[in-house]
Image (cartoon, rainbow, N blue to C red; front, side, top):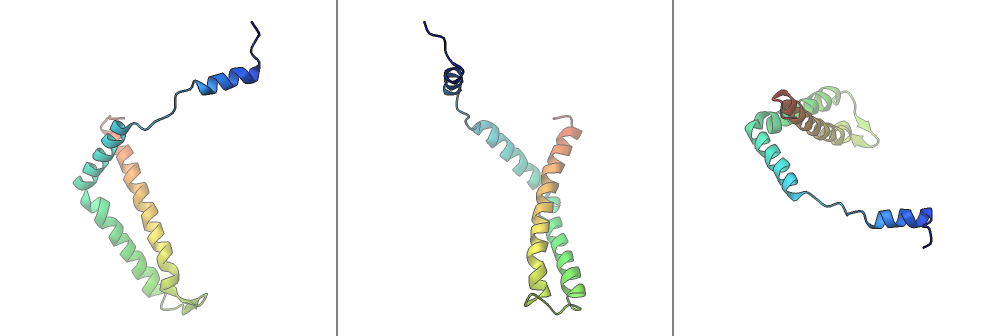
Length: 110
């Protein structure tokens, strides 16, 4: 019997490793729980980001934008609007995920 070299042992260990799959039941459970949580707090999930976006657009677009004519050949509101939208998307995503984790910890679920 010949001894196995390090590369043969490594190859054998990699080949016998089970492939990672998706836990569909767990994924469905998490999605269902998050969707039901979002439906319980619609003001926090849907209305607050819209109000925040409109306030930013009003403040930066009309108050500050009336004093600045153009930036790079574009009106100030056209220049600032994509940044405000992305700011609100990232903020809402962080708010939803962190509040879900915090509330789960608060009720001793996690």
